[in-house]
Image (tube, rainbow, N blue to C red):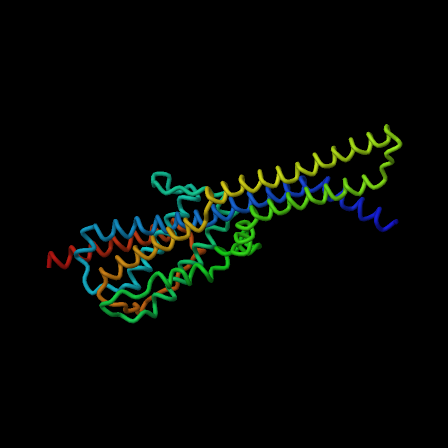
Length: 306
């Protein structure tokens, strides 16, 4: 008898607090979904910036004048340029550029670390490509680089993004199941209370029936809340769909690298090739690049004059 009473109290406690638990799970799921979406979206912003610079280079007169171009050297130059320019802007040092990335959010989402890993890993793969007239599987390289990126695949650098996203995808169905379970448990608890009803005691029977109907009504609330949270999370999952952004991210990198491959003449690695340094001051790196460009122009002018 004592065990039955404890079970009845446990079921009643669970049913009473089930809506609160579902609300807490819904808020956490919505927050993580939004965070995952923004993490992927910010990496897509890097892909957009890289794609923009590739198109500007391909359309520039300098691209037409270059000969014996190395795909690796060209990709490295544009990836580094994209990286340094974006984070020079993030630090508020290049106000005139259109690229804009919020510094606080970048720190939260570890955007700089993720992009640094992306650039280094991409260059490592591109460096060992064998030159041929056919385009290599650059999409596979991009996907593999993103898949092994420890920052890109972690929420706040801690939680596994893939596992969290898969769990959030199935939560709408779990909300419905939890709501129905709460309803049936509430009905079961109400039916147990009817067992002690004495039909000869009209007032007592009425009180028991009133309590039973109240419990049934409250139990039905679990299903209503479960369905509401399920529909709401479905809408949020569609609105903040990281899968759609991820496809765009991969496609942008692939199309940009394809253009560079078509423009290149080989995949030779320069003898003075220096490793990408993500900790370097972006403004210093950009200033050095601008200086080297001016020196090259001066040397070219001198050769023409001679």
